[in-house]
Amino acid sequence: MNIFTNSRLLILVALALFVTVRHASAQQNVDMAPLGFTFGISDDDAEKVIETNGKRIMDNSVDSKKIRTIVMQGMIVSLPVDLEGKDVSTGLEFFGGKLLSSSLILNTKDSTEESQMRDEFMKYLIGKYGEPASSDSMLTFRTWTWNMPDVKLVFHTNEKNNEMKMVYTYEPVNQAKRDKELDKLRGTDQEIDPAQDMFIKGDYSKPKYYDETGH
Image 1 (cartoon, rainbow, N blue to C red):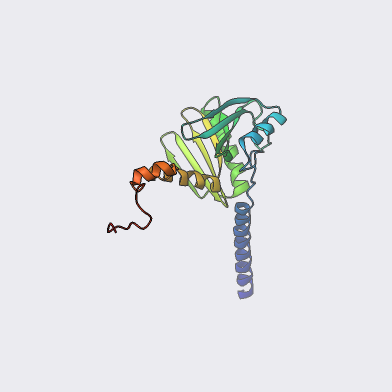
Image 2: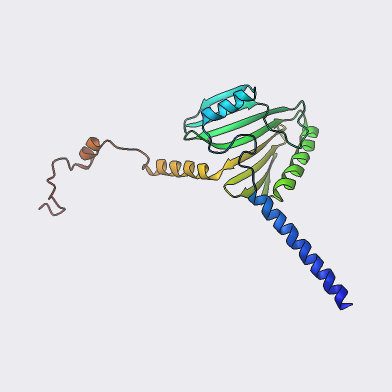
């Protein structure tokens, strides 16, 4: 009886370890080009990828924070989710000319289709990356987040307008963006002309041997 009990215990422990290792493996092996665009590529290279795949660019703009956004009609990868005939687009964001994030945007026709597609995407995402690290909801918005090495994945749904978005963000470029924004808030992001700097500091007439005591 003890042998039987111990055997069952060992089997349960082995299964638990298998699930843990499988989940960790899924978290580690994130695709660095999840929607067909490799993180860190330039906006010019991304446009070439779009052109090569015969897709149409719906929007190509730069905002006040110098973030370039490219929105492409459709997508260039295949997912195990039925998107045939659906209103799908792919969004790309670039910071410093490097791909910061890629997103799949889906507009469904009604709440029934939105609920069905949400379930299909959650099944796909959990099967690929494991259970989300966190989830949240507020009013008509629902969010699930996965944290992986160098990549954050956020799946958003909005029941009010029947829209959902799957966003992959490349954290190294995102960190550079945050650092740049922080430097701007601190006022340390501007390069001052050396001649102008001399006059701002008032040291243009100081001898090299001048010190704080005036000697």
